[in-house]
Length: 251
Image (spheres, rainbow, N blue to C red):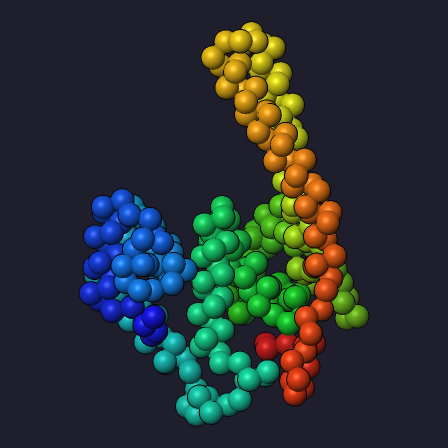
């Protein structure tokens, strides 16, 4: 599988694939690239309907140029904590952001969440987020409010009484439980429709089948979430000879 940045020819092939209605996975297969690479490329350059190969290529060149200008001389030789490559981490953050966006999060909310998930501490202040993402504090505040409403992050105060925004092990559990509650509400509402529209009618049958499907999914999802919850608190085994401190942050 080839590595490195997409070429202009590959971007043209992506544009053709999108015009033909191909799925990201199929375009990736034809280019021998990871699906995540194609997804990120399209989402950050106008989406499926607005993607243009020439514009995407120029935008990538501009971003690379800005990064080169912003990189202090000799910074390539500065060791990264835990042996991380800063550019590789940045690319991964962009990939994770794209995945969050395809799951339904707006772009800035996805960027904030990806930023938090790629810090070892799992928490940052508003000013730290603004500095990392190069956006205004007001933009961060709006994203934080949205993510809190979705129960994807939480707030806490550190020893210096600064407000920090946190992603922790229990948030995924809480997110899944919220999904279960949402499904249960859909089931209840669908069955109300059955009585209103008249049992046996096409519309009522459609709603009843929807309720039965969601009922089954919800029951199994609840069981799976409870059984799997302990996985969120399992610490991975440290490979022999690995002395890196897991608590250190690559800020």
